Image (cartoon, rainbow, N blue to C red; front, top):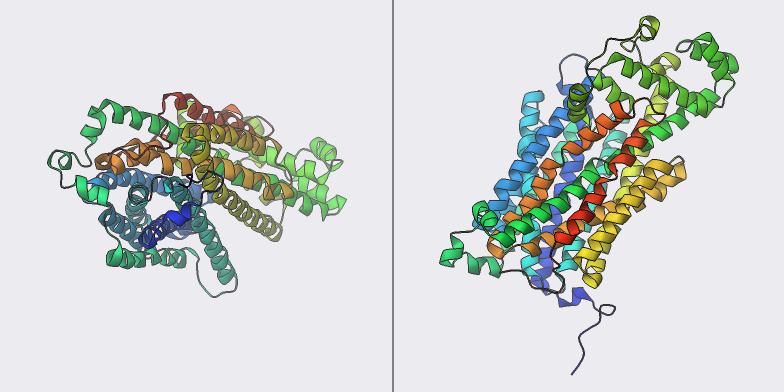
Length: 552
């Protein structure tokens, strides 16, 4: 008799038959393309707002309405998660997956024909519903079809491949930018949304061959259980499933806030740090007389004399500080957010600012020639051509940072699967929450150089996004077949809805608590990293599911 394979020699992919590979590939493509459409929206949001808003909207107005559109998208995500989580248990994983893919791809495509802000956010809401529903049914389908021991590896791979969707969207965005620059297209956002409709073709493949898991087929024909399919009342009436739903929500909340309320703002941090360096390069290209003349447009004669003796990088940082001072003096939350480039905080930052920091009249020092209502500091100091150079470099390096984060994420998500199968789900979560805390805090504290983008950002992506593989592996193991999609969706999507406070809290910390500091975004990010400790506090209440079959 041969011994069971050890963890070191185990090759999970040898256990899968042809149909199981097909299920994994289709489910991975569904989630990968889901993430692809999400990222297309983030890339197309600002140019879409610029064209769809009437008149000539200011950057602050574009960011404000971009925040509204994002909020509507996230509301659709949450509602879709609730609705399709239930449908996934009631009508089946496959049928629900087809509906969600058709929704998120179809309405992404329709976004390309938007004529105004109103129909655009309607399409984004309906797209969000499809996006929110796909995750729970996809992971439930894979979890129920795969062999027990291979299941975490399959789900880890499914999540890891989502990074391919994100990177693909970034490449599409870069390609559209190149075509626009070459004069081949009139705008980038409409073609990007048309490309986002391509995932609808996947439904044809699903319809031809994919079938419902045997587990679900069996319970859907059992009288008493069939009547409880996808029931939130059943989920919360049962003490065990209720507890699992609450602890799962806690884990999801910590990771989602950590990603959307901290991790994604590392791109803005990169933009801020490198903008200072690009501005310093522009300063260095000027003669001493030109530098003095430029500074006098913003600073007093005494300040100019002191600054002109400093390094170009110190001058760049002084300009950034002056812009923040003027924004704060205006009492305008949108300007404060814009001065720190917190695009994603958008609407939430504005709400938090208005609630916690009452409007103030501009001080005398901020009035007159230095009024924040006039041109920004950099507009007054540099020519349009020089500003275009700064902005182009900033956008390019933020895109590079995004790709670096996703490369790290792909490795981290599969790494969680390996770690969870060897040590257990709870130890794996504990390691990853601690790693996410340390790596993210390190980025916000130490990142100051170009080369750090290529190793610090991937490490942070590895650590933060590994948690999301944990959600894909762990949540389906917490609930029985007749509530698996419902419970998984509850943990993930309610966690996302509650976590919407994260960007707002970061915006408030940046614009109010640390507004007068040297680097508000850095300190706000460091403070927000504490959210990962919440995940550690939840873990003692979580059941360990390693080596156990899925609940029936």
